[in-house]
Image (cartoon, rainbow, N blue to C red; front, side):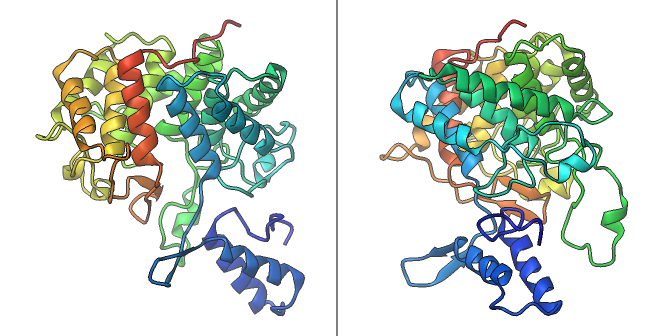
Length: 389
């Protein structure tokens, strides 16, 4: 009950809210109890009404994640950094920064808060991935009150650095959350329930630290070393929170380059060769969810807008702008764009639990292609110049 959020939900997403209501009811709480009423009402916010009158229940919503990625996409596409839309997005993100302890404080009891959550209401569980991307987004905005941006970034940096695991990497929600015991529980049959460090989250943190002038900070160097040690023999990186090796590789390569690893580095060249080797005949990239179970599906699947963009982000960062693979990928995005400027993407390219819980982010098909095309046209991310210090 202490972890019920102010909107009545638990954990900001639908599954823990459902199970919390069930558990409390089994413990004797009447449905009219204020906690139960708030919990049940929170579930209505996950309902999506269809045109035929039926109702679909979403597992989660991702407003912070969507907003920071959209802001990055707009900025990298050339929108003026002082554009009202970007300033408004920055104001909303600033208001969402969490200023109280959460369950992460168990392992870091003296660390001041400063992160962002993925959802509308989830103050108990801010996550490092969102925090890194929000900082990258805020730095792309020319805000009329820059001191607000500076203060928020300082708090976020302090919290993020404090959440580094002992191996030099970062998980999403916790520190050194690597125990195998929870996965051995008899009723734990729904996927990965621990939060070990991952390449994609660590890459986003390293990229953020590099752009904040921390390239030579010992903590950043440890993160870089861990990323290099985690590269697969194929040249790819595993994607914990996106499908899969295309996402991991598309996250890591730009981070390494931002942190000063040269494009000629053997790890970067292996990644480039792998991406080129799995490019589809039509010029796009795709990866099936089955890659989490079967290595034969690594980098294999029908071309999608988001996965094509992830591959392009890596190749562009690695200096391959004028290469044939980039030209074919950009052409695929241009030719598959719809009349209204959007892309279609029926496939699930987001990941909650690898294989067990897949996510179709409705904005992925827009924000990542716009980001990739923006970097293809404009080069280095707009407003994301590394800072000294």
